[in-house]
Image (cartoon, rainbow, N blue to C red; front, side, top):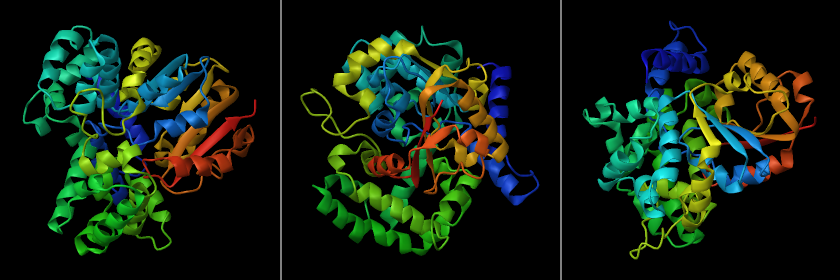
Length: 420
């Protein structure tokens, strides 16, 4: 990545996160978060793509824009056969990861090699596959990122993450690892959750092993600090939104409730998010190599691989913010928008600029989905009424889709449909 491009990426990230004076306490916390967020944060995205696709009702004519994050969901949306996807992200590591996944789907020789690279992500053979099949065709900026070296990797090239278990790395991977270490200090091994058989055993393990951890002094102290959640990609503004979701203003009770949903509302046999949280990786494959023995993101499922390979060229991954990209799109040209939880970070000015562009570019019937840390939709009172009057908030559907979201970490899922 050129110095000019890197500086532009940093400027966009600062614009998204910095809301307070650098001299203030919140301003300093925001700048610490910005520094932490510059590297790889999400090896895996933490929003359920199956829920997104049910809400968006994608068709072969659909053109969509989505925040890329770890790239899993953008790849998974291809199973719904949309015409075109533009994935945007402020984080250059996420852009490089998304582009690597897309190229790998097209150039790696088989499903087995693709799954080994992104499902297991811990084999030295992945480095040989990168050198032979991917490096020669990878765009210059992404190649520079993966060929670059990082302090967290002890000076090794970043591409070696795929030989050292990608899912143990990135800011989120390190944070989950720290949570496991703290749990083991109290005699609890979170990996025992994947040994449970059925929802009753999952509930029992949560109640007897995991729930009591939230009453421990160290856990309560750590969760009361905004910086303790930076590893989950939660900036100071979103921390405040999470605290507001608790009647007592207690972060530990919010996190306990979210973990309870992850543990108790969905079977381990159907929830790859729970496998990542408790096992720090996907379920192991069957010994006969016929496929994975546990749940996977749609893009990693064997049956979907031919479609992913065929449609990968429909996706473009770009390093810019959502509003900036929409300004380049024609009027009434888009059908679907995926905002993840980015609006929790935004000021009223940023929200109005974003929704002005969404409304301008939306085709009749276009749909927008997003998550929020707190339960209610955050748009009323922040986005102009004249803009929101052009949209219908699908409240009942939003509540139901929120219940279905297996990642379980958000307070609310929200679906808006364009009236135009």
